[in-house]
Length: 444
Image (cartoon, rainbow, N blue to C red; front, side, top):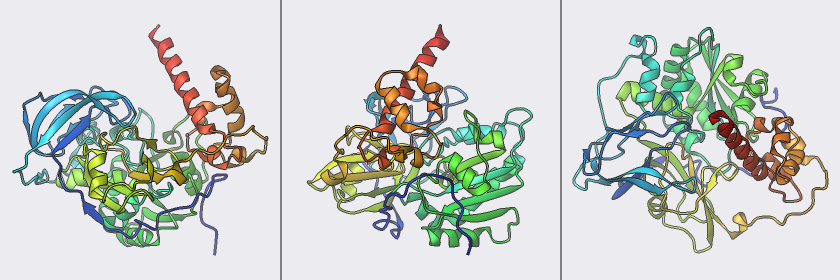
């Protein structure tokens, strides 16, 4: 039996998926108020088209894109706009948001409309539809989906790669989507593949999800240009460049994108959202979120309206244990610890994880012993130890020559470090400073 496809380097953290991998998706009950940040995607924040006091219906456009790298925002519930003002955001700052008070008497029926045949959309109309649907990458990055489908002149895409790895510990939201809605995953991939004109579509899934692999294989049966590829279980298998390397053995050059090797990568949840828009006219107003971790009373996979306060989601799952010390939005490797539970679920929120003191405690930090474990772990073949030392010394410009901007911030280096050095956190701060300096230089 041949070994499963994978990439070089990486790490093997404990999976911690057993608590929710078998749990069917259940719907989160509607709550009283919803917060819709105008910035919950990469790029320019959306521009409000409603005002306080306005009545809105579920699925109605409440904010329009403020540019090409921006996307539409829709009301997750029928109700009344009560404010457009700065509100707590998961990123840690107050950011402009639309606050909606749900109508308690509304049945909150999902939006509907006649199916739209994507084959009838010529030119840029397909891209415009994805932007109108409010679609973003749902694996965590929240990059506006339509941007990937606006191909530069003269560029051609040969392959569509659908990411079903879900390699972060604890998270099982994508797993459950593949098990419960495999036909919609494949339908979305079929729509996307036809738009791109690819010769092949591959759905890459880690081997620790045999039921998902089986469900997708049944769904793709009879489609000669589409196949499911089981992958070795390793972190960060779901990173775009690692997935491309695992499936095709291709390396995306430094500073370049998957498009430069003729590939577009999208998450399985994004494919499902594409099917929802074209077949049912459902915009992206809700998503599956894994609620797990030792600090939560009842783990679950929930279908949650975007804008639902995190506090309400956790209360629906029985609340937090008295020993809980940290709640993380996303996965434990790349997610954001939350400063407040009053922030909302976003389009890119894949999980809410509650950790006790045992998991949240920071390790004691010691001097680097030059063991090289961070180098062996780094999937980008960088020297994280050197980058961390430069970052700690404020020597940010020197880091560019060591390819700091190629770091995908997966955290493998910090995980592997026996000295407890916060390697990826230091690199992340340095990259933010480099971006700030570049933005300042561009304005001058």
